[in-house]
Image 1 (tube, rainbow, N blue to C red):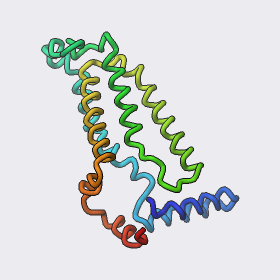
Image 2 (tube, rainbow, N blue to C red; image 1 turned 180 degrees about the vertical axis):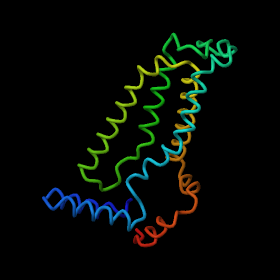
Image 3 (cartoon, rainbow, N blue to C red; image 1 turned 135 degrees about the vertical axis):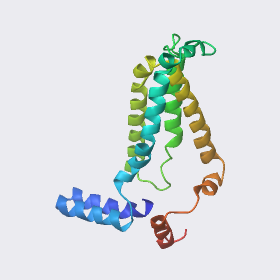
Image 4 (spheres, rainbow, N blue to C red; image 1 turned 180 degrees about the horizontal axis):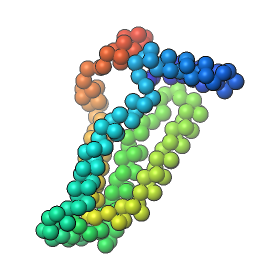
Length: 192
């Protein structure tokens, strides 16, 4: 995607200058095809994880109905895993950890980014952060079992993402081999 940044910006500028949108769209599609990628690929990991997430969600939400002992299996201030948290600590913790993960996972603007790119990234952070905060009313009605799962999952993700961002060389060591299209782009990009 980084190799496509300049050509995409040029196409967007041509489109804003009034060039035929059909031509711009066709050239954009050809650019994506030439680089072996697609804007829809961003959604593939989420779609692949959706069945697992929904299975966990439904299983944990119905835990107290299937296993009556779950209503006695809580800990600390949430003794009933089948009921919502009366202190609201778990919903606040799960929402707060989701916002923290979002802020940690979004990379900073690249060096030399234009003011418009920096502002766009700031806007994206605000929108996604706002959407995450909107989930708080939904989390208030969730059973404690679901919220404990979300808190644990967010905590693990924060540790993982933080490690990747803070430990030098870890991201490269865990990256593995590049897919064929990425190898082609990497070999055609001049070394800095």
